Image 1 (cartoon, helix red, strand yellow):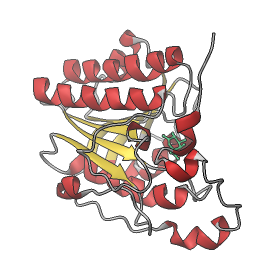
Image 2 (cartoon, protein in one colour; image 1 turned 120 degrees about the vertical axis):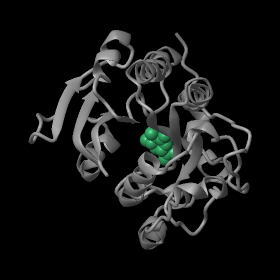
Image 3 (cartoon, helix red, strand yellow; image 1 turned 180 degrees about the vertical axis):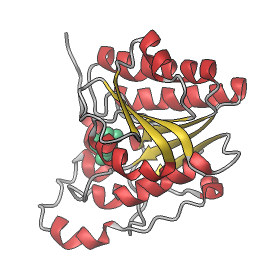
Length: 266
Ligand code: 15L
């Protein structure tokens, strides 16, 4: 049974634009929000609300009448801490506070592989691996996961935190052969995350059925997520790119280039 109203934050972003279309079957109405302007609603099934996640009152209003939230908003790359603080850290707090006040019981949180980015590519890790954030961005996603854990334990609001690998139309480089998540697999994972009962706070890695995977989802089998796609179909094309230098973080760390972003001096 589809939701009555699903809120999608970050609807003008790279994934949000895709999910605006692909999540359509799962809710009668999808409310789309972003800090950036969005295309006008294309019918009665869409509502468009521009909103700054750092504005608590605005986020509270945004969540009125919502049954579930897919939180894809915020900054999606490494930036100075002060920017991450507003959009991601304050933003995720405002989302959960609004969920609590409006009685919203399910959140799908777009977390990131950058929560564990300083693990080596030679390791295979599960959801219980120590977090090794590789950036202020990764730290903010780690904080978001803890926010989800707290709001479940304290208020019973359930979340699936998806540690998304690299979700693009196709892998862009050699590292993404391992981290690629197709849009179809992302959509299926969100569907499982919205509708699987009793998820508590579940952490799941978002990757397609790639040949060389660093992530083990045995702790999230209750979601029943079975990726259909694989980066293998892009291997020939990607292997035309020059190999990485031996000391390139894209060859060493799971988080790749995020591991060498910054510092940001004033
Ligand atoms: C992310 O979290 C970013 O949002 C995305 O732009 C990619 O860089 C991705 O991780 C990745 O690790 O490839």
